[in-house]
Length: 478
Image (cartoon, rainbow, N blue to C red):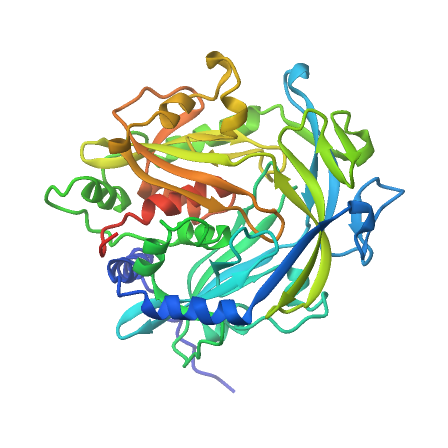
């Protein structure tokens, strides 16, 4: 019995598909209606959602223990995450160090659910309170869940809207890429950054609100409001309509031109990729896990683990009671920084196209040794005490920038599920052309956008401050 051949589907040119998504996102970015409904949703959610966090000694954390065999802090179930010692070696023996690090060997989902409302893409955002947040509620992705959360290991309620991210038949993918978390705090941790669109009717449950990309961009300027996971996803969106801006509207025009593929570039992307690959290949950084007791510069005192010179960060224990979350109460270790950090990028215009000065930075917890980082990524309180010749390159330039040259300046929180009251100053400074030191390259926003479509090229801090820069995309009043 013969059967008729099955015709293959008609392919959609990749460039056309990409530009269609980018233009729809650009239209959403230019749509900035009022925020009255958002503010009302925040007020209503604050009355319903409550998270109380108190610090407790690590040796009194219910459900956690010091493992005698490994010397790690681990959960009694063997799941979730552990706090381990990490010994780091470099090509210079004098530069070796040890530190605690979080090991969470699972890939979580950070996802936006998108839907067209009145012809414009909107994103369903969650108003979520994490135990480490300084200000309670923050604008979070539709789904922000570890694998332990969404598989029900914690014994809590089901994660809302998860089905759109797990069932391919119910979504159209706009972005989907595994990205790293902070390489100095997590050991090879990755999360799946997703943006999926549905045409189904979707009701915004309590604690959720539909926002345009323009509204999200506007909220980025508010201190500690848009959380780190949201900023990471925003950096992965293929923003830009593919049509270089014309006319002379200053910084906004330069930014639009930088988002358009095919514009003037200081370095072709293939050369930038080769530079990254060579640095990774030649890197002498090696890391291995060790017992927390083996960390010579760290001590357990007062129910916490801290650096003997009180630098960097400390590992503390917390007890959490929550109303309006999947789980009502729990205990866990968290990391608390000793001082606010800085994530700053320098930008300049090259033939009318904005370029960003990116640093290639090796960190011991990264999967592939090194990723692109902000121009300056450091703890200012520590760097300011160093002699000028020992400070990070460009540190003094960004710290002493003239107000007229600052394009973005806001303190934003780190991820509140693992970090307690920890944040970074996000700074964008426009400067004249500067020569590139060996570990730096000037790249356009289009090039950085290409790299965010793939894993392990931009670190978390770079994606976070890149989202801040992209929030200046021409739209409504700021």
